[in-house]
Length: 447
Image (cartoon, rainbow, N blue to C red; front, side, top):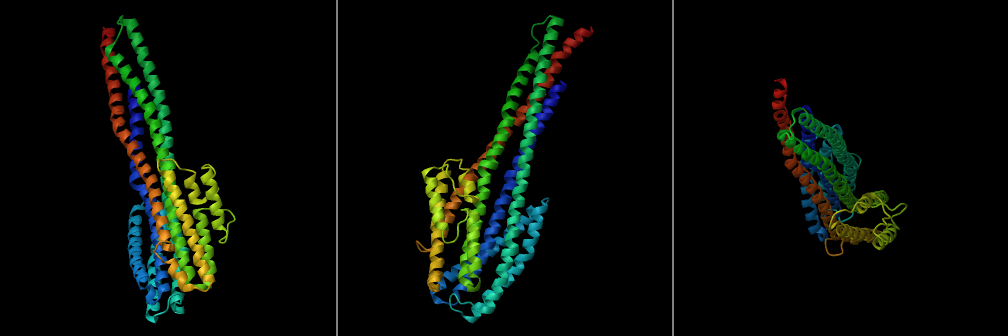
């Protein structure tokens, strides 16, 4: 009976811990990672839109685009404020997240003040497109430097801190499940051996062939052995699928999405500030390399190397010659529909990169207005249109992995909802049957 109680304690405790882990991962830690990448994207787009508003100036040719940028700026500001507030509430107990949030909270108000003053000053001067008021540009430089040196790194640290918290929970839970499996097997085998030994002793001592209660306890213990043997490995596999097959891709792709938005902002900064154009061009390339790494590629040959790498991949899906976040994804294609979605995203990324070279070619030719128009165009073939097409394809790809993640969480939790009561009831039944089976025989022995 003692062994039966120990079996119940070990198996039920482990299963209860696994159910709690699913709740922690699915309801809190994974959403916090995704929300942090959303904060990064809202912040970088906020800076892109403030650059665009100043870039358009008072030129009537860009009045519609300016109106869109103003709307997007207001939306991004609201989103960033809300995401920061939600992240602050969720960061309790995570020191890394709390430190990152403190830096972001302190800097966001200062950024909004600088960007707002810059846009208002440029508006009052009625400047032509691409020729900001020097004083307004100075303020914008202070704002974007604050964004790039403080706010965006803080948002990125928040992503890393939240993802590390999930990884810690994942590692601990997988270890706990392995330990639970070992102890369950040891205790259940010992229990079965004990039940068989007691049954044999009672048969020899009291000349009864079968003790019904002990026989039933033996059958239930055998069923518990089978249940534990399947449950704990199943839970480890659900955890692995959720974390590595699905969520590793979600993290890589959501971070890639935020970084492509940052690269898009670098294009606006490049057009706005001629004195810093080379720096912003370098930043665009650095960000692009983080998204899809082509070792040694420059802004001049990135497209060619990308086309070569894509061609090699299409000829052989195992030949992935690029690294970065997209390299992570293309080495982790697992679920139905994921490869097709990934290939659409890659094609859209290629188109967006080609657009960037066209923008720089316009500038090199002294056609700044054409560069601004092309960069901010939502018409078919325009840079912002292709940026939007890439973003839409990327969100679909993220959705494939997010659905798989939620499916693993749901299936893992559902298995526990079914099996946890069976473990508890089975262990209790074995203990009770042992008592019922042995007590009458022991009473006979005492007489």
